[in-house]
Length: 256
Image (cartoon, rainbow, N blue to C red; front, side, top):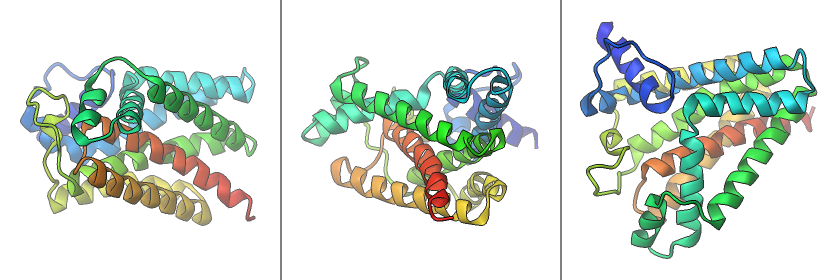
């Protein structure tokens, strides 16, 4: 149990800026086996976002509370996934071949595709959450608690199904480049899917279908363009599927 706890804290320390106990020893091997707990990290991030939203919504208009809640979660993760989304937009939008795409992604500067993509992603995410707030504070909180774990499961599934394409041994995501075992994938799936029980059946089905569709499309697109994934691609898929969940929930409201 202590080893499993250390793996969870390894994942938490890698994907967030939250402090972890000093007794947790970091190593690439531990990170390699910590992928099973990436969706569980989403529980923590989702809880932070939901708690901040519920507190802020008591004293501020919904739109402002949503933006500040997003800022809190971005601070908690160090904009880890947002940075991946922006880099992926730049690389896949501006690069012609695999080598050029990977070179652009590695550039620390943000370009036109990354700027536009990041702005549109954050604006659409905020707009979706504001629309969800029309049903009450609980609707937003539940959406956050569902979206963060499930979207991280989507990224984890790509680790399991695609090959890591960077040859640079110093790449930050290099230790993640290992297919999960059946047991590890089952653990990740359980933590990613379990929060769906918080939604109404129709909403849960829509969220799951949206995530599956985006993940399958992204996997095929990355396979065609790059032959696999990079760390930035994982962050991009997390952002895309998180937004897809919010939109999937909203879409069900138009049919009820």
